[in-house]
Length: 168
Image 1 (spheres, rainbow, N blue to C red):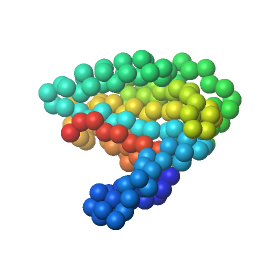
Image 2 (tube, rainbow, N blue to C red):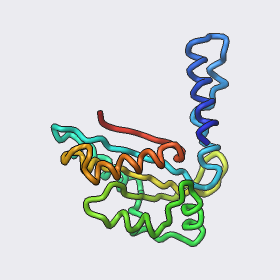
Image 3 (cartoon, helix red, strand yellow):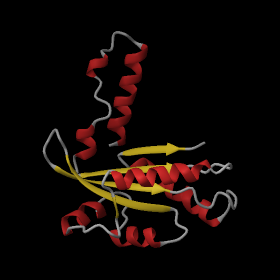
């Protein structure tokens, strides 16, 4: 997935620089590739702000998730098929581990799910959002939670369909 997205991004960048490349041929992002396995796996990282603005960012994002129909994974009624799809992701994280992570306070990551229909194919897709919270940073970069957060991001960042970061 990453190679395909990278190639599309490079093509889009070239189209902006070189007028001989038609921008109309650029298909970034390639939703068909992202939804192909029936799962849209994406990560949102909320960065820590020394002045506390990360708190409103986090609250706004949580409100957006609720409004958009995302459910914390430990409250979602997942079918056996949904669990199988989610547990086939790389790197492997079981649904039980996701539910356990949602129960940890403070926790590094929270998992949210939402089912939707791909408008182009008509196929059902489950969206998995890995919300990485701004925890542990106040205690310092070398705190256990900050270290855990950094390791999680590094392990999963290159494996998800989309990665978003908010902060500095």
